[in-house]
Amino acid sequence: MTVPARLFQIALVALLLAVSGTAARAGEVRVAVAANFTDAAKEIGAAFETATGHQAVLSFASTGQIFTQIAGGAPFDVFLAADQERPRRAVTEGLGDPDQIFTYAKGRLALYSREPGLVTGPETLDAEGLGKLAIANPQTAPYGAAALQVLTHLGKRDRFEGEMVQGTSIAQTYQFVATGNARLGFVAASQVALHEDGSRWMVPDHLHDPIAQDAVLLKSAADRDAALAFMAFLRSPQTLAVLEKYGYAPGN
Image (cartoon, rainbow, N blue to C red; front, top):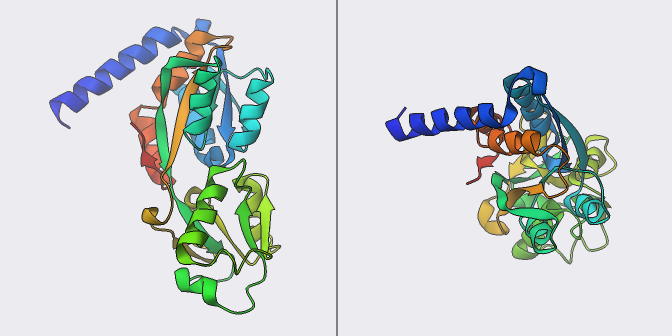
């Protein structure tokens, strides 16, 4: 480990201790999490509680749904989005702290089927008899918007125009494929990172806009110390290890 990296980790630990305090002062942070980050967030939340004594209470939905809830006064402290647009809007609209916003992860898209051997690459989209293709709602879920960009880039959007089934979130989209209600679909790579069932094609990043996922501290945070501790923990070595495990690239 380089000296600068070691100094950064020391400074980060000091910050966590400063904002989290002792177990006797342990607080609670309410975190609204984009659906693609569900499994990773659960691991990060558990590690956060062990490291700081604070409890992370997690709620999951699509990014668009969460933003609507926040704008309507939902009692969240931290927003982990699947894009950069909504956290920035939260700041612009006076809901988020402009000094506490950053990219915590960068996501990847996968074309997935529970059938072994079905998905081999982009050529899979040329096969006959594929039936329904599942994507997340592109209006509310960034992974759905990315899926449409991929189809457009490959010249396949018109072919599937009447054969797409949309999940309200990437979590529901994955369920469509996992249960066989759709033969294949564009899901978050994190959803298939820990198993080798079925078949998948990891979509190259150049086929869609970057899926940069931002975190923002909300001004309505009831326990600011616990919320700040969680924001700091998102940049900790523990979190970076979880990101790598689930196929995310680190943010900034």
